[in-house]
Image (cartoon, rainbow over all chains, first blue to last red; front, side):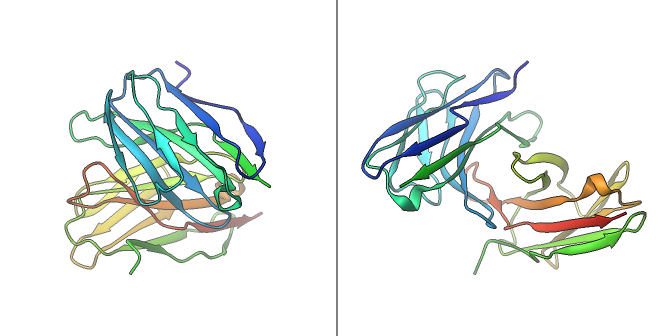
Length: 114
Length: 112
């Protein structure tokens, strides 16, 4: 199993450009999450999904959009990129089995907006 | 008030010593507590989780939970240089669906 995979690993965007960060998991997890991590800071939840077709906002959703058409994929869309979106983005997934909520993280996407 | 608070450190301990990492949380109804390790430039990886008051041991790691005082700690016995990393505390509050809140992390350095 590959676990959680993310593409691209690195990206530089100009202000106002758009892009999609891809996330795929092969563990058949229902729950998927997008976090951002700024230098020296903890993880902030952007959006999450409890299953295909269901998404919800986290702490910092402004400037982002998500969709969940399949169990495996949970892309994050940035529209009109701004310097404040420079960060490392992590996708994670978890399974709800016996009350277990452990999250497994992808390798991250390092995004710079200039 | 932050949901989850950790001392950012850095915390330095000599090799072989016990490292003690602490985390406090604001939601008294929180149910699940997690410790993640994050090496520089890498993604977080789960070390331990704990749901019930008391201690939970896994190898050199012990998680301690005190819901009355709203804190959770991680003890690392026989610390090794490879334990040098940032340790993130995560909490799942009671009424937030499936959201988790992370602390800012404590940076640990184990000195050979």
